[in-house]
Amino acid sequence: MQHWYVIHSKHQKESLLQEQLSLHNLEVYCPMLQMEGKSPRARKAWPYFPGYLFTHVDLADVSTSVLRWLPGAIGLVSFGGEPAYVPDTLLNTIRCRIEQINDTNRMLLQKTLKPGDKVMVHSGPFAGYEAIFCTQLRDTERVQVLLQLLQDHTVRVDLPVSCITAIKQNRP
Image 1 (spheres, helix red, strand yellow):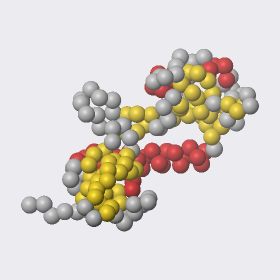
Image 2 (cartoon, one colour):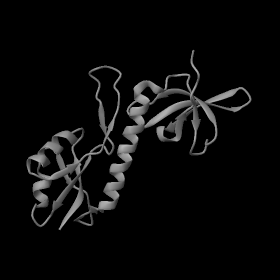
Image 3 (spheres, rainbow, N blue to C red):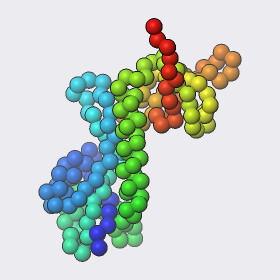
Image 4 (tube, helix red, strand yellow):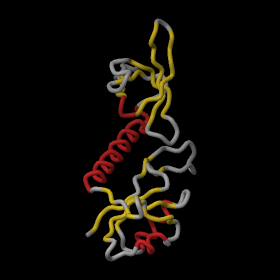
């Protein structure tokens, strides 16, 4: 019976391992966060789970030793010597979350938010606070904002991108 399994890759060899699994006609999923690099040569995608990929296989048809000895592979994630599988519902949830993060990041990366723009924090411990957008943190799904908490005292806070929304401003 086919299940989704987690395969551990060597350091920064996720794409090599993904190619190898595809060459063996195995379905593979490597959740990637899409990021804008600071330079044209900067890396544009980063693994959400560095060092890990998901593969959909029937272990009765594909030996675990085949998966262990693929170039770039360390082996299947196992507990008590048994490969652990990921339920389809969890994998679908991960896919949806990655899509949501990338959509949110795309919105910010399209330069809708610039340093100094006002944002509203709509979830988390600072929900309801207005803040000033500083920057999207490098290679993450987080942003840095300035919150005015007490009188004229502002604090830099790192928040998930999904916690903020832009406040429309009338610009001349």
